[in-house]
Image (cartoon, rainbow, N blue to C red):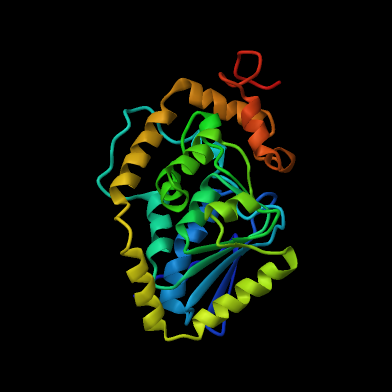
Length: 289
């Protein structure tokens, strides 16, 4: 007996002429909540098993945010009562991101506005990313006392090179669209009015080609790089270790108290991370100003 079809709560999914469009809509900032994660996890199987999609385009209903980071309040609820254990197989967010990287149909992200944390890691796991002058990436985890634990430490060196990946990960600051294009995180930087039409035209062009050739060509391109599994397992283990550092829990709470996960705070999330200071605040104590 087949499973019940997934009911998407934060994605608007439509398929026409072999092109699937998934519009992310989770106000107020497209935070990567468990509901968004559940929808993103279900989408590949839905498209490959229940539709005639040959290309997937992901875009946002919010012009200021593509996908923000994972919900920090949820991260604070992750169990930390025992020691961190290194898994032997990919789980959770890693497994979901790998599904998009390896699924048979190409995945294209149309990124207006801000993307960061888990949203940046998810985007980097997809095949292509296109943006505008408003596109801004911020891997904001290290200022919170943790690390990009959803593929970021493994994807970014492959996309940008080691030195630039270190700047993005360790600096935890905003990276503008022009820099992201120059560094290779974005395929192209386009005028805002041209972004949607360009992505639509590219998706339609690919969808018009033989699907077997597209799928095998994607698989062959992926084979050019090493299997990321071991690195992702190490990243997951080290992320779990950072959660067990008391100051990390304090910094994440201070981030929320200072305006993290509010619209105004997230529009300046790079600066907000810097305001936490070396111990969480400029006055030497973790906490709100």
